[in-house]
Image 1: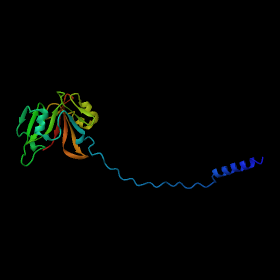
Image 2: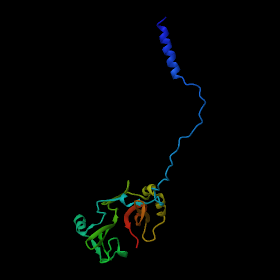
Image 3: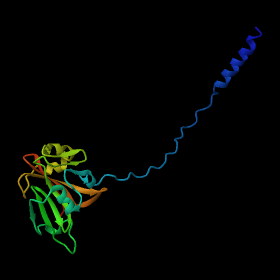
Image 4: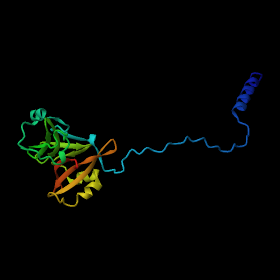
Length: 202
């Protein structure tokens, strides 16, 4: 019996340590909330735009290259239209304000001096294709495919183009959410993609 007394005392002591005395509830005090900064607008005002960096072209040099490199990759052009670039074009300079157009079938390059840049490419032959992010631009691309990504822009393409047969869709170019002068124009015929045009206004 004497051995049980010390054990009982220890257990009672432990029980007393774990119990909490009755204390009136303290009023609920909300933890201070850190002031949250205003959200930074990461989306442009026009949600249906494309960043220039989203566009890629397979099988063709898209960025500005030399004419020597262009002919090395694609050969000589099928046809050259001298001084045919309107409004000076992308490559215009004070010394050379008007550029030429080099035709590779329906694929077109603006050429000024020894510089060249892709202005449009044809997808109907299946030789070239492009991408806007995950959206493939090829001979198999339909207006419905593009409508899933850009419904508002596609709605405008429901009306046939006044300048050429078929439907046209215009996607504004942005560079890091800053609007640029120009757009990517997708030209359709009977709902199927025909041509991709890098458009720059006058």
